Image (cartoon, rainbow, N blue to C red; front, side, top):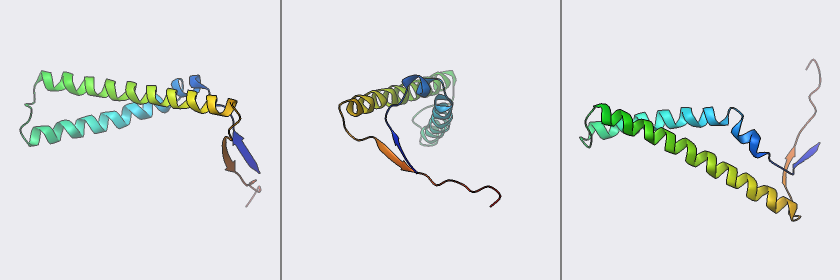
Length: 97
């Protein structure tokens, strides 16, 4: 069975698990980068480091959410003009196997 993706709802990007997953990735990335910066002596571990790391997490999440929304809008626009959408081939699962 072939399925074609014709439209991506922008609201489904915003109000799904996606922003939480982005936050988790940003958290791990920012803490890791902060630890690396601390190891090489670029920063000291104080409240400004905490504020900077928090700001880095927020900027990362907002930037990727915006990029995802713009990508979805461009995809929808291109599909509206007649370009072929993403095709997904699925197989029906047999019960009990």
